[in-house]
Amino acid sequence: MTLTLHRALDQKGPILTKAVVRAADKLNLSGAVAASALGLSEASFSRMRQDAFILTPDSKPYELGAHLVRLYRALDAIVGGDDRAAAVWMHSPNSALGARPVDLITTIRGLFDVIAYLDARRARL
Image 1 (cartoon, rainbow, N blue to C red):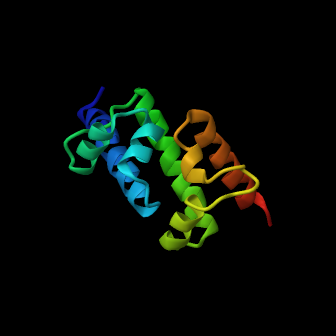
Image 2 (image 1 turned 45 degrees about the vertical axis):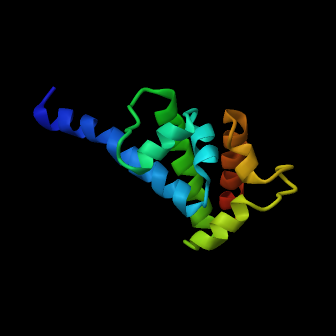
């Protein structure tokens, strides 16, 4: 591999880690909820916020982090960039999902159900 490719691969973890922390903050997720969504301890997520823990590519938390960012981006597109509206939506009961999205994302199935719901909502024209 070339040096440039190695550098690009080395940056994947830190870039996604920052994106996950930013998405969690914008969605007003507690450390416990964000950690659970990623399959990490709350202490590990706290270290992520302090740049002391980096998600590593090819790990389960990295994959789940990518999906959490995907959820944020889908919701952001629906609410037109209004982070407050996105956070309110995450913490409000949703009759179609049968629960508050914030409660669902702590499991893999719940995370994927919320993403599928948002993708379906975005697809409407």
